[in-house]
Image (cartoon, rainbow, N blue to C red; front, side, top):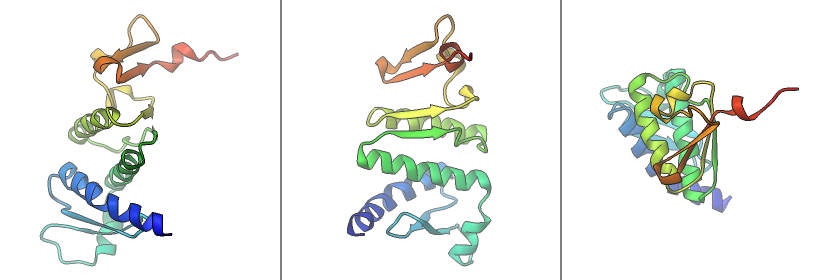
Length: 153
């Protein structure tokens, strides 16, 4: 219990800062319980209960917040994060922001993304062409086309 309380306290700041950056300041503060459950969100210019605002967030915005929490945990614990198309409800501007955030994180921890929409995560130039995989960023990023690797029987 003590460890989860410490982790919740340690991650609330970084997650809130990233979420505010992602949403261009629209949500300046996210409130978390010690177990990292989001308990409320502040919205600029809106006087409402934090719980009702949290419930009113779009599916995509809730997915963004959940992804940022997972990313912050992976960075803090120096562990791997596995994302399975977590950004399907994301507009193009936020996708670009997340691509950069995931690239930055990959310099400090392993980020594995499973997706049927690779262009959400990398540019067309980064996709493998004549081989099943391609290394980028000096080997920090590897793009693998699993349809060329996994064979069905």
